[in-house]
Length: 134
Image 1 (cartoon, rainbow, N blue to C red):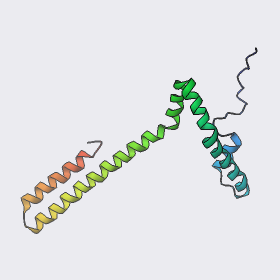
Image 2 (image 1 turned 135 degrees about the vertical axis):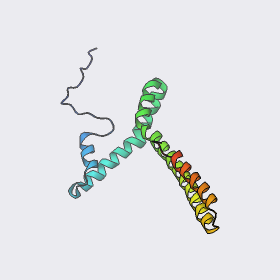
Image 3 (image 1 turned 60 degrees about the vertical axis):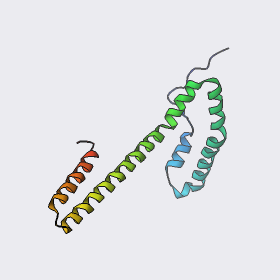
Image 4 (image 1 turned 90 degrees about the vertical axis):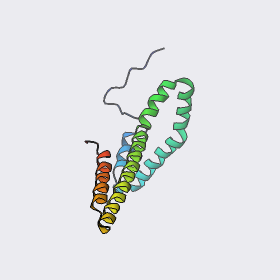
């Protein structure tokens, strides 16, 4: 049995999309809108039809390769989760600072400079706790 030689650099590279599908999906040319729609439809069919079969085959026959695929496809998922966590922490920090600012205002209305000073220190601490450089 003869082994097929690797394709040259002139050959088309393909993962999920052909070169032409990439062009059509990336551009929003009104003249190619129908072709673009067809390219999107073909990609969707591959994702929903063929890709799950490939994943199943890899899971059964080459788990390491499946793991490599998952790390490429799911890389941004971890990043998004990290951003959501950071956003939640920022919201909590903002809430703490707002609360302390309200306390400062209330302390001034009570003519309580010591209370205002304490609230200011707590607000500064909340801000510095969230500062990645500090």
